[in-house]
Image: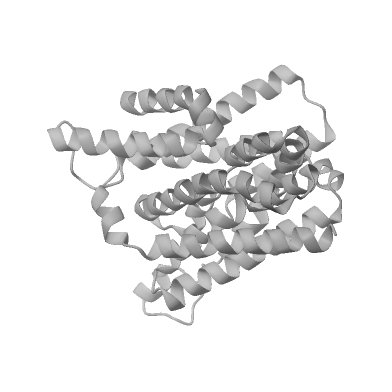
Length: 334
């Protein structure tokens, strides 16, 4: 447990440094990278077990603290934020989420031959809110920490690439800053990356980028529920019992319900800034240590075995995000 605390604190400190802050590399992707590096280092020296089964403390971080962090994220969102940007931003976000999920899952499974779990995790990371969405979807998908690590790696790669591309596109397209901020928020993977990309354009773009991105984060709960209903209703236990006609009931992730409740409370009541600060700190710590545990338990062989398929799928979704998001923004805000 001590090594996970050290990785977590180190990731939080590094994420606050100007260079990493400008690149939009938040503590979550940094924690999983540091966790992977430290895990490989200690296993190579023989100081850590080579057993693929995570320890009890790692499982606690990956499951319990992860859910706590996602629930607390809800206190940073309000339903009123949806109304401030107008119906266009909501339509753009919903259209992009739906399109990316449909194409990503279909192409991943049927064209690239990926497992259903990995295709869903990779797609949901691009469609909704990066690593946090992947981690929130895992309890329904039950893909395991290996596939989660691969999916998060694609978010880090293409989310970072977007930070180099978006300022260049702004100089070429000559779109008003506020509208370009909506384009950023509706297409960039991580919240931290949306903040970094918006800052490079200007204060107007930063504000609309954050608000649009938060609408996508707010869609996390219905997306997870829909995936559970549509894709993971038939559990593996049905196949093992050879009773294919029996359908097990959908397992509703209770922490998603608490997430929505947190958003509702924050929408109805104005919490003190000090309370928001404490909640944000606990949420960041919980999510970061969950990522650290995920990275620490990841084997490099897992990423090698995954091959180029997740990268190809993420690249396709990256192009889809930019092209669709830009087209919808130009169409609806013409």
